[in-house]
Length: 95
Image 1 (cartoon, rainbow, N blue to C red):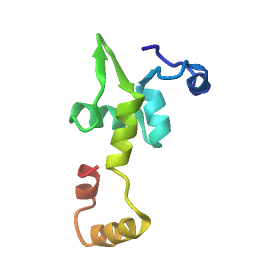
Image 2 (image 1 turned 180 degrees about the vertical axis):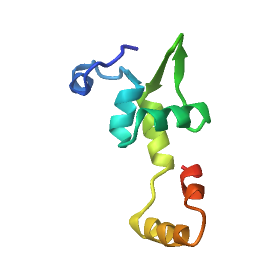
Image 3 (image 1 turned 90 degrees about the horizontal axis):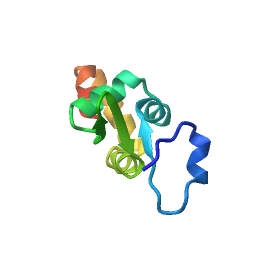
Image 4 (image 1 turned 120 degrees about the vertical axis):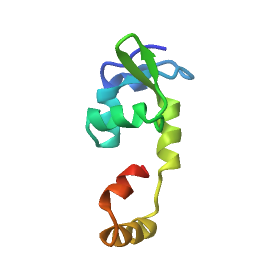
C-alpha cells in the first residue's frame, strides 16, 4: 500500500488500492491535532500500523472508525446538554 503525500493523490490511485495515511492527514480529515490522533491510536480506539517510528492508518479503518462515531445532530444536542451537568472530560474519553 503506498503512502499518500498529498490528499489529491487519493483520486489518482488505481481502483481497489487502499492507501495508508499519515497522522497529519488523518488529523486533517478528522479536524483534530496530530496529538489527538496519537492518543486515539495509543488507546486502541483508532487502529493503525507501526513501521519503526512511523504510524500509518488504513483508509478503510478510518472510515469504519468514523462510522462508529457518527452522532445525529439531535443526539449531539442532548449529549452537549448532558455534558454541561457532568464532567466535560468524560465526553472526550468516550470518543
